[in-house]
Length: 280
Image (cartoon, rainbow, N blue to C red; front, side):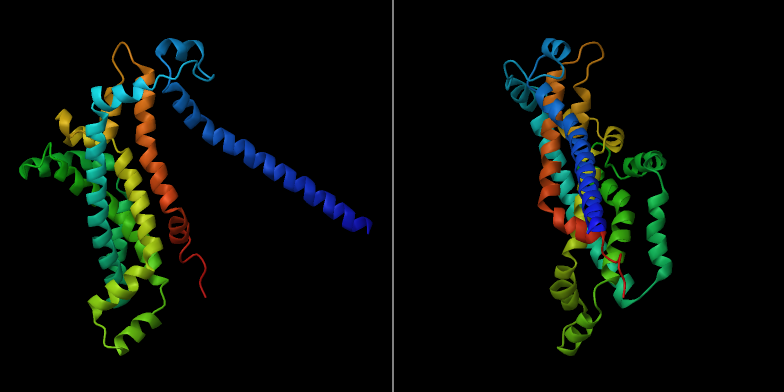
């Protein structure tokens, strides 16, 4: 009985410590976001004098000025368009290619070839991208940015999709073949729906990479009307004076789609990232 009480007490102490550590970690992770939200409702004077407190009088005009005056609204639309087109193209290409490489004609060499792109830093692609797109007359065009984002993310997307496709039971393909279903039918009606967690993982990570990118956009886009959201927000920081309330309002606007995207596909992303972790 005494041993049982000791174990019970040890378990309770351990549980309290775990919850305390997790609570502190949650507060530490959320506080920067809360600080940005509060700062977006202040002016510079209040940010300097009352950095960590609640705003005395919420300045919702910062959001209106950022959306219209700083062209954040136009850049927001550009970013959404670029990300959605990139997601659509990348999802179709990687899911089809992964299906062929893992379930139809297995090729370890091609799988490794696609995965090698993960080791190439983005900085090494800047000069080749400029030269190639200059020859194709795609400099300062959103379509060029879509192509670059697709090429940059395709290796990691293939890596995720290959691991997920290999975990789908092959009996599904065999049963569909017996029923007279062709390769295209097996892919679109059976494999593609089952692969939704992997596709959601690829879509979420690609969306984050495209949405947060600044380097490639600065190199390929120069016209203000075609800039993405990250480029426009970076331009809000002046050389001598910066309206930090306006800047934080732009940050909040840019964070909302990312949070919404993750909350929408949270379960699918976790299932996709853990696919293939347990075999047998």
